[in-house]
Length: 97
Image (tube, rainbow, N blue to C red):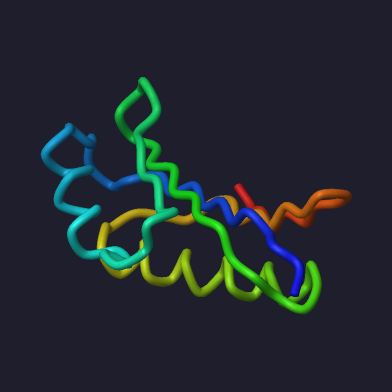
């Protein structure tokens, strides 16, 4: 089964500090060794990425949306981008303004 990288971007409703990012690491897929969380320099954007296996790019994007839901439940804010990237192609969902 092909492997994909999933990426989620969330604009937090409150600035993020290191403690907030560490707290999210403890609740968003704590058993996922590939999960990475970091904040952008402006401290309002949280980025999350991980690896997954899926039948195709469409299925991987669905898994990315599920990850976005998990992140959104753990941190108030608005998910504005979800991406699934394979070796040869990618799909990106972006919310409106």
